Length: 251
Picture (cartoon, rainbow, N blue to C red):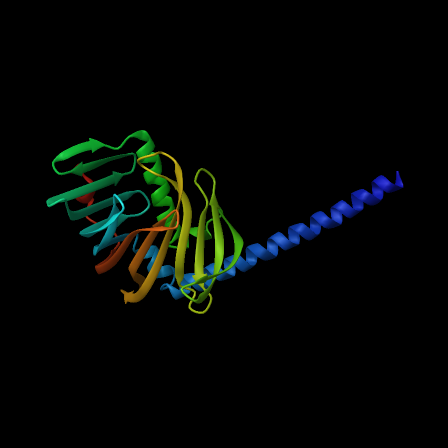
């Protein structure tokens, strides 16, 4: 009986110690989050502007070849997005418009249009969730659980990682510069639209500039399973409280 009681006491002490360790980690992650919120422009600004528009140009990998593109993006968080991309492939100019509007969406390519399937809609919601975590302020909500990921070198700069978990969505890993507290990398699992298999997606953020009192990256690099997939330079970045709803109409 004494052994049982002693073991029970030991387990209770260990459990209490584990709880305190977890609480300390949570406090550290919340403190890091607040530093990041401040570095990106402060909660007041970040909450005020859930809409953003920008133009972009760069390279995207198609059939193992880097192809130049131009385009534009419109976002209204948490659940509306529109992207337009123009490129030349095999001598043919191609324009693709993708619209996601809450529980529906479309892709229009070279005059051919299709509705997003249920699986595509589900994946689009995962994309929007991942994107929303990078706006930081929503992570203050108790629906999000933050855990430490340790440190990582990103372009020779020390960064510290935070695992973001929310019920119903895949985990998202965010890495912040230890000195500036700016977001340097977002990492997650996603489904490849062609094969349906899960892949690793890493988004790197560079060249931050002030936009309406907030810091926003002007260079973005996306890697899929460790390989370059897209490199983009942004321009004409503008934050809005509410973008024109017609952007999310069927194209």
